[in-house]
Length: 620
Image 1: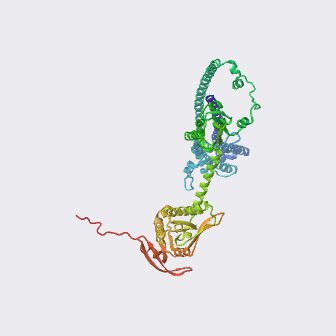
Image 2: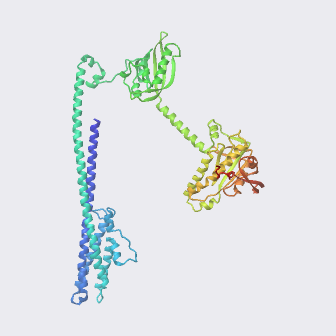
């Protein structure tokens, strides 16, 4: 039956395609016919316009032998022909009420009709005419003809020879040939469209014939299948007693069309509750074999009552869960556990699909002895989906918080702490600033500025992620602020100061890659200071921000602002910590730090590589 529907839809689709092709092709051919009419009219009128113009040129020197009305008639005739030529040109290019515009339909027609080649002023007249489109030629031709008629209208004037020569050359050697090419192209397009339509319709007709043959074949097979099924059903039904069939409610409803409404008048209150419950309820014997179930088993698991009755309850759970259910029933049966049990399991539907359910098992007693079980299944698909969505939303929110706040602070917030603040005895602060960023950004668009800064800070973030104790604090315009030792109270000042310097030196090393990527020549200034105490915490509630406060921060900022480019400027406190480490420390001298006066500061760098002067000699 599905195959028949598919073939029918396929045939309808083919019919729609045929209609679409016919309508489209009819529209195209109609346009081509109208365009051919105007193109042919344009060709004939251009040739016809020369006749009265030549007569005017011929009789103009001897106009005393002709009356004024003769000249007036010829001029009027020439004007009418020229107007007809211009009208045909306009209708062809821009379309009329019966056809669409010709321009844009075919590139060859556009090249001939409206597209000019190089028309510079320094070209010769002949080259100019050769490069002009038909539209341009007709415009020039009309202007020449109008000028000619004006000369003829005035008595006693001499017609310029170059005017007549240009008129004849333009029409006879350039325009007529182009006009003929347009008519030939339109005819060729019409022939091509007709050929394409015939080919497409032939292919679709062949497909339609194949579909019709398949449809007839499938109908024949379907009919034979129904006949054989009917005969088999009749053969099976003949084996049953007529009285048994008449007493079967489903047979009576399906074949005899009797009223199948069943009343619950004879059911007890307990039976009505079980039958109408939304939850799936199984009543089993002491060994877990199902004896009674309600109608909800079909809506939850997809099984019919006949498929369920007589089966062991464990069959309707996943393998692991089924074993747990069987074990729990055995424990209840042996008096080893309570007669009430709840848990979350996965039940198996008739489509072998697992669905989450909440299972309640109740042991039923009669005369103090356990004689049956009630197993209740409640669908938890929606609840599980809600929990999953809630967990996903929580994970997304935590991920967003990790991008805003340090991980340790996020953990404290998740524990319910609101006023998060603490004192750090010693930390190392670093400021990284782009030198003359205002001059660099003045030549960039706002989009480029944000894109370049985003890449620059991303590189620094990637480097910072290599150092466990480096914690990014915030961005202040083009300034990158970070600190080490905030969340590592056991770390010594030497360790967090060393990590900060290594981080700074690696940022300077990455400048070449950044400048190559941005096609720039960025230079940075870095200031580092070690000290304490530092107050750290979360500020704000709606938009929480992690920040640090303390005098060592101001010193680090002053060191950055007074540093030379592409150097790491450190304070006396940081230098005293790193003196015995493997760094090259150079005394800068006393530096004026705003608010601090003059202080001794230093530049720090990686030690130069050690060159072995004997490395190039080979000992034999």
